[in-house]
Image 1: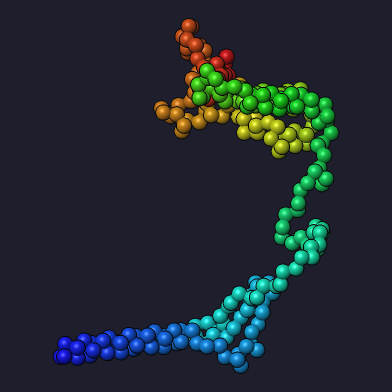
Image 2: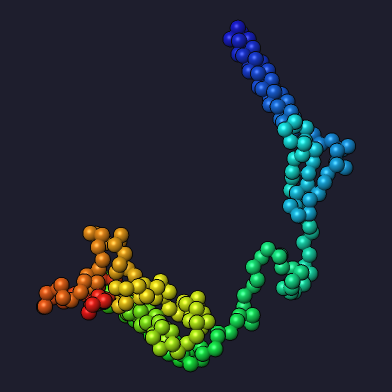
Length: 239
């Protein structure tokens, strides 16, 4: 009998402790999230730009709290979007398309066929089979065709003076030629430079230029050289 009394008393104490903890949690929840006051519903300030509603907050740090606004009801009516100056923001860049693209300068029609041949050669070189080639040999044709096209545009402007400055700058801007490589050709000692990777000493093991930059006079007679980057066999200025 006394055992039943002890068990019953323990259960009563346990039950009272659970009830007290539940009430304490409920008080804390009410303190952190007080119920909505009907008198403050009129103070809601909707913000159309941010899609939020500002309400008065009982906290001292911030007088307002923000909550998401109610979304608009879904409608099945759809209207076609028409881009105009009113719908486009003034800070957005203009939308470029084939209609508002500026035509090339005068004289482009004379060299357009030659540039088209270079672009077709590049596509064929990229789609060619790589069977039996080493990993570094796969990009050699691409480097060589790009060098030929840049040299063609360089000779037209600087050597033959067959194109205008406006057309030359337009070709560089549209990536018809490598402007960094052409900038090196203007300097003394780099008139026959094959590619920029051959003079980047930070990418080599001994911080030196490629072997194709060594003049042939300093090489052995029977020594055959070939650049690993683009397959060049010698581009020294004195050769």
